Image (tube, rainbow, N blue to C red; front, side):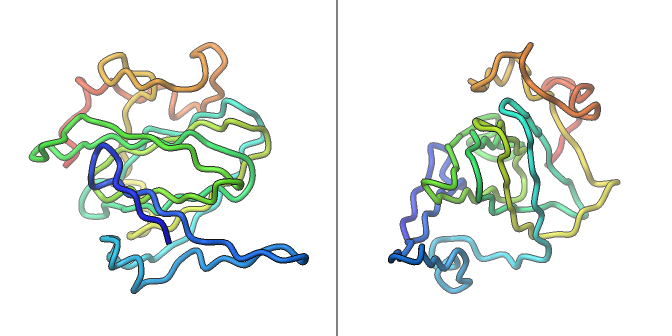
Length: 183
């Protein structure tokens, strides 16, 4: 298993090996002891899956605050995404900083996003499927977000604003400077 810390060190890119033969491949995509050795040691309680039909679908930037903050282990099983996380922990030395990675069915990488981060992604291909494990159950009252295209964050999204496909909920998220303290 390849483990790489990103420019915000609490964000970890993990690439499990794939063992292939004429039939296809096998991969152990999660192993609790090995992930704990890599610094990912919170228990996972729920798996989520999304399908985005179009290229340029933006989901985020989302998080859950106390009492139900979520860590996420994100992987793309079909297609490709540009996956990004922003440190929203006020006491963190990397507060307001972000890191991103391309996750795809081809590169098999997974991104660990710990509690305390905003998370979002943009599909790079049509019919993209994303699966992510989370460390706490979904709780509507704990759900928060920040506008994906906030100029203060200046995230280099791989889609122009006019072409981004958003949910109604994501269209009205507050700007970073206007959002209440999250963590």
